[in-house]
Image (cartoon, rainbow, N blue to C red):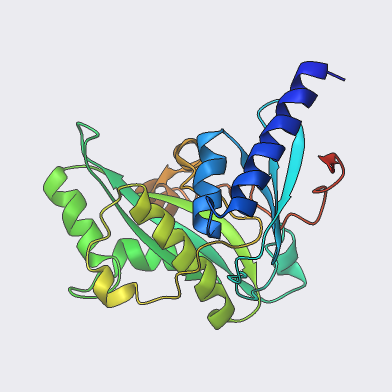
Length: 240
């Protein structure tokens, strides 16, 4: 094992835990900001503890009493699950100005993404859903792209937590969300199990496909690789 990496993660754990215990880190949101500043990735987000992974691959865990547990929502499971369980796909439609200085986004959920993408492409209605995004893209003279973010098991109501969470991540990342006061009245949890704390720009760009190709050429967008963290989380976490 890399002794330097181990010493680094132990020192980081000690520093973060001390900041929590002293009250310097007062809530979960601040903890996630500190973690992001150190380049840490969230692996666990429990009611009284959080796990993180360093760039070296080493993991650490800190404990707290913030009294802001994440809401109980269904686990995020892999793409194969729709065959046996009910649920909804969470997706995004995005557009970027030609100079890349502005960007806009629409986030939605669908039990049948191909059908929903056809509706977006062919059945736009003024004042409804993604219509304002397509107007934004038309003014910028750019294409609208589609990406499937995750699969959320359970009911429409449960999927709305994930839909609202990803919408908030997009807005935090600087996306305009045209007309979201009409379509974006959703729960906005601060964190959800297995979900990225920040909008995953690189992953979204790598998996986005022009909506016209999705519909006209029947190309199926790939799903981003975010799952509930019960599979491997904890196997290499360091407890001190």
